[in-house]
Image 1 (cartoon, rainbow, N blue to C red):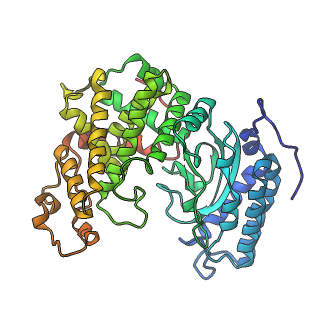
Image 2 (cartoon, rainbow, N blue to C red):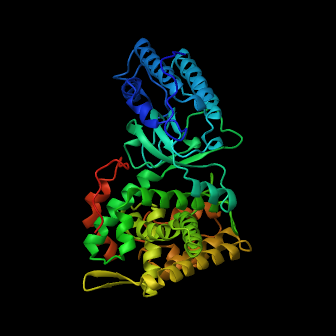
Length: 465
């Protein structure tokens, strides 16, 4: 491995990610990866007989440039030495094998960011992977990131919200797969010959989440004429404050998938269920984070109040109007939260102006959380199909199903001789369409939502209303 620089240490003993992206080897690495990506097929391999494909020699030379750049950058990151050695070996083996379907299991197992969660600790990550909510193909990607792990968050994880696999992350720079809506780095997206026995980390980019939350919330507040309390205005104007709120929200949300009365595998791996089940699971995790944030605020943890604002605003303003309407389970959860608050007089749309009764917002939001938790608790004693119908009943109490829905007509409208997974075919792509309120809001926020693609903390963000 090429030796060029001693490891730069920032104030407080934490390595500086800025030194990685400022090093001349980083743009070289990015350029080589961007050159290589268009040659890849969906599974990450290269079909050298395809139109526009390079020669094997050119592909190998491009990966040699990637390897050389990694070897120059690796001394800046001695905590990732084992990973970078394994990464170089995986890249060389891939090239020697003629760029077949990539297998980076060895380097994936060597990458262990959750073992050392230090605030500001940088990582250089290179993998063939798809980026969730971004690029569905397994292209080669390179990203420089840093850990978001302030002392107060580390203490909450140690004493209250144990989540040893969670990594709060922030971008420094990235290749095209992250110039998208993706805000996660998950090991299951990486091309490997076989899935590891267990995953040991999962990363969420709280800087991107905070930045798009600020931009969309600002536009929604202006569009809807919503008057904000001073502390919410201050929060929306502060990227760092929003980022910390999302780091806490994500940490509690993530662990909630495996905590509580769970009638089914909350991650729903290889399961086929109606998309409202996914929507309720994600909303349950968000509202659990909200409920915990209420407790933390009462105990004097300042980030607790911010998490409550983040959950309500992101769920109500961004989620319902983001993405396609086909099985949009996150959008469904946002619609449900808004409808629940509206029908309990916490949210009012009067004289073309939105009003929120902040004095009751926490109580009623926790009330919805309680209804979902009861659904789950009761579901332990129910057959799967009965549980699905009870969940549908909960959602349709507050959201109007599509008038052409078969499920809305009840069990007698379905062929119950079929297994439950086949009945999912009878679910409409947009089983719970947007209300007139959200149809209008979606049109007004369309350009703003689109502008958040690839957004980071360093993007030009609007001031809060």
